[in-house]
Image (tube, rainbow, N blue to C red; front, side, top):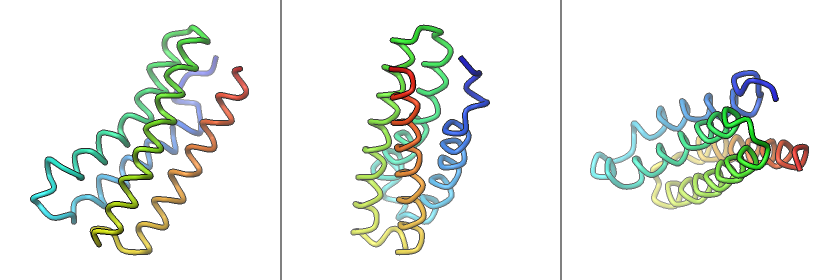
Length: 116
């Protein structure tokens, strides 16, 4: 198995976390323990679970962590929709972030399928 840092999906997920942090800086301050925290934690969970699963060096464990990562993608996608509906994100920022999370999710699906 390749080192997790060499995986394009991990690299894209790291970049995505950075974008989530930048975009949530403008959210209302009363959301610091709500949507800001939820979005950031779910986004951080994506590359973190890829890395942890990869380091386990067991295919079954790796698959399980990749599936958890994929679940975090769905969580982020849902939270982005909520953020857009609350007007915390501009249409442009929402579309970009949503496109990125869908791409990461598809890449995870591909990695999962290649390992099964």
